[in-house]
Length: 356
Image 1: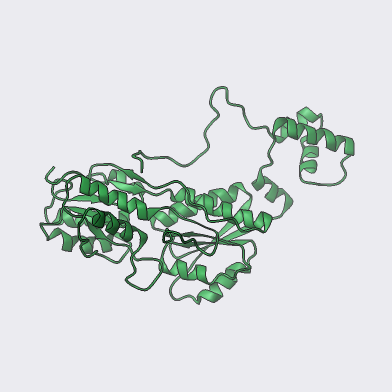
Image 2: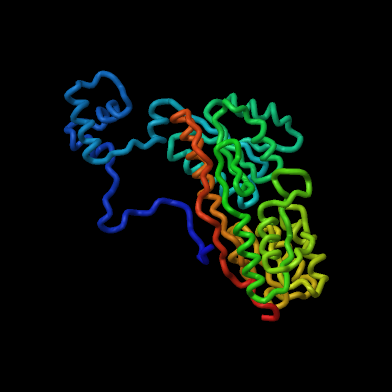
């Protein structure tokens, strides 16, 4: 893992001095000595263009390195390509940032993106069938048990890509998928707390997305692996939810135990609740208890104290998942699973040596 600061995503930046501006359709028209409407007809494959004119335009396109704007093409041609995302949540940071990456990548490629939120009350087979009937392909966000159940119901003939928890070592999902190695990330975060001098590390857990109830998530597995490697028996994990309320309830129990000096949380929302619970009983962070979160949600850097956490590139995961789906739609072939860059441990104020 690497220690790093925040990375901003967002709007386009202006070319730096000396950086060449991408060629526009008007640049091609000027180079070919034709109108930009003629260039548009050539690059969109329209008839009624003389072969000699078509050749000049195509030569100018190659010489200038012109690339057609996919979104503009979709609007001009009236051909709208669609992708549907199936997810159980759009609010938590990991889901929202993943959706942002998916939306940006699909928009750049000229695809319309629809989002269908699934709930436990849905008939999942019917929901998947209805989404598949809209045409295009499906992206399933399978970070939780409901999302994983949706993915299991996608027919083999439907183009699909998924975002999933890290699979067990040596295994890959049955569909093209992306994930981050949060198992190793949790191991590294736990080892860091042990290296600071804490006798053990308690864990406020997320529910696992697959397996029988009570099955450990990859983050819990990484936490246990680090403790066992240090010869420490893992204490029972706390919590079984996703939000700050679940973290607060777990944190109240941990806060009452003076032997608890280090806590790893399954996400930053849980950590937020843990920090509040520690504050309510007068335990200082990090002097009395160190806390590390997971995901690097936007609020984590602005808490008091600021939250040490594991940064997950959900935005990049979303873009990578769309790339896998687009490869299927463009070529009809399923690309292998793809693992983006590793998560990174971000050191802030909430973790330190015992009694610091």
